[in-house]
Structure formats: C-alpha cells, structure tokens
Length: 338
Image (cartoon, rainbow, N blue to C red):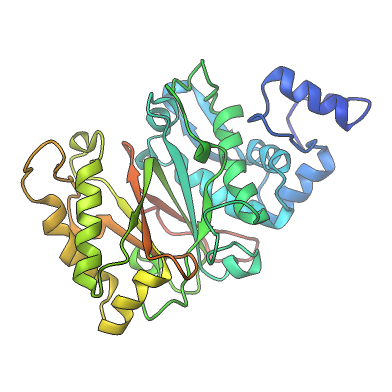
C-alpha cells in the first residue's frame, strides 16, 4: 500500500504547472507519478513502499523506496531502471557519501553515477561515444532520478538547503557505464571487491570535472604525467578533512587506453605510478599534493569513443565513492558498501 498523499489534476498540463509551482521539478518537465506507475516501479525491485533506503540525520530525513519510485517516475525512467536508482540512492545515503555536506555545499557538488556489470547492456546504459552527454535515456533519467530524490526528499532546494554559489549543469544528471570490454583491465566494481557478474552502481560526489587532453604522449608514462599535472594544478578542495584521503576518478578514453593496453599496463600498475606523484610534497600554489590515502583511492574507468586523446578528471568533494549492488527479486543479497 502506497503512503504518499494523493492529489488529482484535470490533465498532464495542470499537473506540470503544479509541479513547477510547488518546486517538485529541477526546471525540466516531469512525468505524473500515478499510483499505477509507482507500483510498477516498486515491483521491479521487490521492495515494499516503506522500505528505508537511507537517512540524513542532520536533516531528520528518511528516504523510502516509495520516495525513490515517485521521483524515478517523475524523472522519466523506465520501470526496469528502478533497481539501479535504488542502488544509487543507497550508495549516496551511505555515511561515506556525506549527503548533507555534498548537497548543501557552496561549491555545488554533483553526483557521478557509474554503472558496472551485466545490467549496463540490459538497460542500454551508454559507455561508448558520447556517454557523458545527452541522448541516452537510461543515463539521463537514472542520474536525474537521484537528483530529484536529493531535491524533493532530502530538501536540497536552491536557496534553502542547497547553498551553491553558482551550481553547474551536472547537477541535472550525471550517469554513465564503464566499458568493461576495453582491453584486459579489471572493471571498477571487481577492483572494489565484487564479482564480475554482479551489477553495481558507484556514486561519487564531485566538485569539478576537467578534460586532460594530451595528443603528444606516446607511452603510458607520458599520459599519466599529464594526469598528475592536471590533478595537482587544479587541486582537490577539502581533502585535508578526510583522514584516509579522497577518491579521484579518471575516465579514460580509447586513444589514451590503447597506450596502456599495448604496453600491458594494468589499472593496478597505473595506480602505483600515479599515487607517489600525486601525493608528493607541494611545490607551489599551482602544484598541490593530493591526499589520496593509498593507491586504491585512485579510480580508473574506461569509457568514451575514439578520436580525441583525452581523459576526464573527476575531482571529489568531501566524500568517498560508495559502491552498491543492484538488487532485483531473486538476486543474491548485496554485500556491504565499500
């Protein structure tokens, strides 16, 4: 039985205007969350409406499966996307995800949602050419559903608990998959302790994103040195407050990937090369060390298409990346968040 208050409007246009007036939307149109649609979404997860997905103690907020389903409908998701949204909400609301800080900060942190495992292809989550941009329903609506939960349930509304000075477009939605067939690299979720055939979502709060373009390097060391220079130049705000360091994410395109595949470099070898160079003593204002804790805090994700020799650097806010298993009826129970 659903618990949300029910209201009726004469048509979809009237609902949409009410959604704008009441602040239920991110500024884009939303789909009416009818009881039938919400129940269909819940059915794909096997969760009861009052199942608690997480809490934000500072705000006295409890997020339930029904809350997530309503906002997933409004975001334009298909019902089969909902278990991925549930995993993303659970990951974000984990204490290591630091919901209160990342959704209320002046810097306007966004939330990267990285999908791994078989469900990527089942749902057509894009991880090839153009995967970080528009045009892919699963990517656009899964990321948007998480943001609507943050807005409508966690009360991160601009001018209220969302105190971002400027904010930025990635706060509408940011979701993509990893290209697990690229070379022989270990997929992100396997590196983080999950089985290759498990589907997972990794959520990480990011405060900026920079393209490290390098068409001159012809070997792994050259590409990695460019990433070190970009990362140290831009710095990572607030990393000193996290004792075990933060996670920095490198989303590497195909032109850069091939240097590592040809030379037989694993992600682990890349982490071992990057870590001492990123954490070395500061040499000046535009050369700041990064508090990474240990090499495993460097997350390397294969994605994107061919043509441009670039890697995107995702700079974190005050939070760690959290991975959760995507659970559907009949699946094996998830493991502890990492």
